Length: 95
Image (cartoon, rainbow, N blue to C red):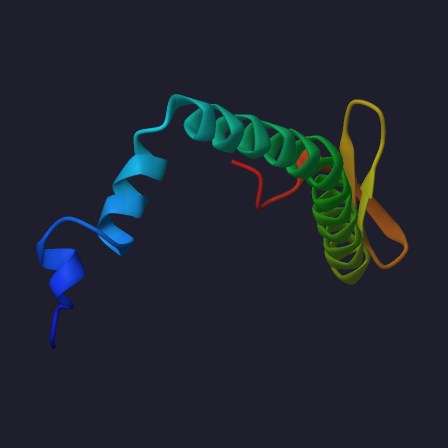
């Protein structure tokens, strides 16, 4: 890889890059934009992602409950074995 003579002498891309990197105003603008974008992304997108994940988990939970005959009530769970409903704390699998 050949390095142009201007780079070796400290003029050109690296000089410009270093001046931008060390410019306080440029750094402040970058931080401001990062803060705005992050707040928008986290503030607006995260609740939508969380709601989607929660809804998906609830759907899967409901499907598994239906598959296994489990009925949730306010403070207890019933396991339905055909016509016989066994309270969760009396179920043989409950230890």
